[in-house]
Amino acid sequence: MDFQHLKRFFIVLMAVLLAGCTPGGDSSAAPDDEPASSNTELEQPPTIQKAADYLGLAYYSGENINPVLSTSHMNRILSEALYEGLFYLDNKFQPQPMLCQSWEGDGITFKFQLQQGITFWSGEELTAEDVVYTLKTAQSNETSPYFSRLADAQSIFADGQYTVGITLSSANMDFIKLLDIPIFRRGSENDSFADGTGAYRPAYEEGEWYLAPYENWHGGAVSAFSRIDLIETLRSDAIINSFETGDISLIRTERISANPVNISGSVDLHQTPTTNLHYIGFACGAGPFSLPQARQGVSAAIARANICNIAFQSFADAAVAPVNPQPDPAVGSVAADRDTALAAFAQANISDTNGDGVLEYDNFSGNRVRFAPSILVNNENAFKVSAAQQIADCLLAVGIPATVDAVPFEEYTARLLAGTFDMYYGETRMMPDFDLRSLVCTGGLLNYGRYSNFETDNQVQNARAVGTAEAKQALYTQLINETPIAPIAFIRDQVVVRSGLITGFNPSPYWLFHGVAGWRQE
Image 1 (cartoon, rainbow, N blue to C red):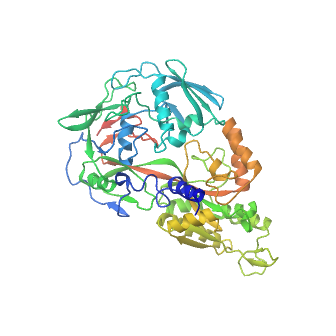
Image 2 (cartoon, rainbow, N blue to C red):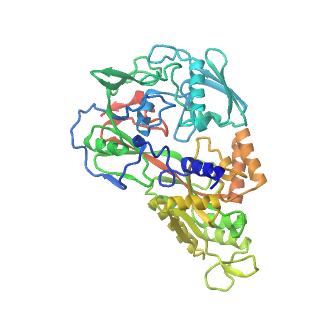
Image 3 (cartoon, rainbow, N blue to C red):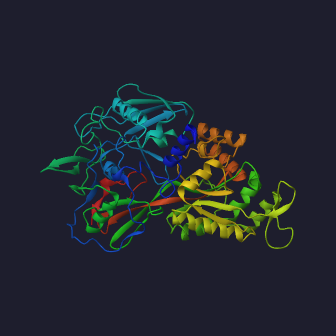
């Protein structure tokens, strides 16, 4: 394998699929390893009785806590208590102001006006220089969880004390959806805890770190939990054990993954939407799936709601467009439609001509052959294998005896890169602006099916540049007509809280401390 293929394979491992399909980070780093056992169940309530006002969070002390440089997944929730971005994203992935008071932009050049009078825990006032420094730090460090958010940022600069300017290399009116990047004070990046503006601040007493409410927080007084204990944790599986004992009170888990954690017992469960898209990809370069009608037929045959309820255990939202939530008005139905599927196949000259109940198509030799494609899937994720089998069952119902080709991850990725598949079951965690360029545009890194259409490329670029509802609706209509991929669902994450601990808990996708000023202890 030459260097370019090695490089591409590495990128796939790091960015394409999530959980069982590909690591979300450095799989060699022990603190970020997934739990070693699969299907872990918390069947018992906490075995150690804690005070009613006790709240504990996981804390990995093997790194300084910096919101854009920390790589340990275990410190993510902790960071959400400490730091804030220019915006936060609500449950519809719409940006809401946090440190930013107002903004303006034409898709290329943006100006962000900061709220004045916001202070860090140190007492220093937040300025544009702090924001610029944070964003440039994230942009210049490939290991930062926010590195890709700023890939199109050509220049980031301060325009006065409270104004931040950003110029992009290509137009994107949804760029502000990427600016929930948490901000720290310039010059504090090497502190044990970088200086932040969040509702809680770090405190040190008797050799231990804990969190205390920040008395000058711009969001108002925090009355719940005068102390949040930080529980030293070395591995992700230790988080589960600490939750069982009651030491840790709040966790976020991926329910639909290769190593799922099934929570039961005395806990409160909350679901949060994600940008994690499951979809079917096609070999668009040749054969039956080179025709959009054949791809449309497959998409129309899929019973997405059933897959969400059965294979995904109701931890998913059905999707026909690659955006969460689905566009309004809808551009397609999530229900299976046999008549629509058969009509689309007929337009691709795929039909049952001999009366045996199986559809056929014309091969390159001009002969009619059975239409029996396979679905390539990673066998290390039982949820995906189950979903792929449900899709195969849907296709069988319209006369297509599809098979599921479940293979180990290394073979799966190798075949994706080589294009040796009919269909494949894919997963990708998109950025919050739902950028489709790598997935469906000509030459895109994740475009394994070699789909290429000049009009689709133009529609993707236009929707990004213009940003209007009309431009986006036109793009989604084009995607429905072309079906370069068939979206299945967006997976939901789960947040687990010790039962009866918090009232008013209303987590947003990337900020579990959303609404913390309104929290009450039960």
